[in-house]
Length: 123
Image (cartoon, rainbow, N blue to C red; front, side, top):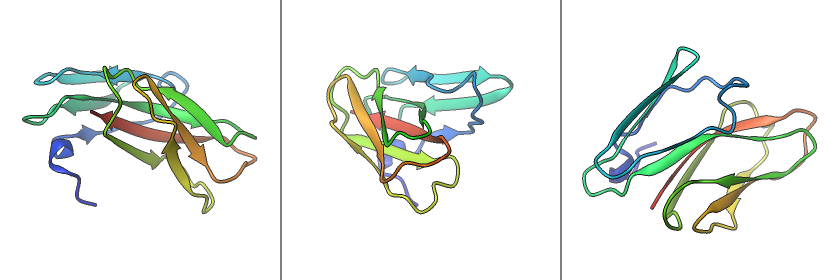
């Protein structure tokens, strides 16, 4: 998948564990942010003309079909990228209820397992 220009410099290597779930990383235009968690590196860099962004890992827990994510941006995101980090069993996933402070991550059906998703939002 080719990413839009403002995401072209986004580089990630994420390994989810209990210490990384729910973390949010926010950076301003022109900043490069590298964070190491338990020996794993997550790097975000703002592309020229971009407003920076915010990203992290969110989990929809067993028996649930959604979770609210506080994205940490100054305004409503124009773009939200979501990627499942495990097999979601053919279920659909999407974002909804997008506001200046949060959005809702949805999955099309309950499961007997929790599912983690990496996400990136940019305004």
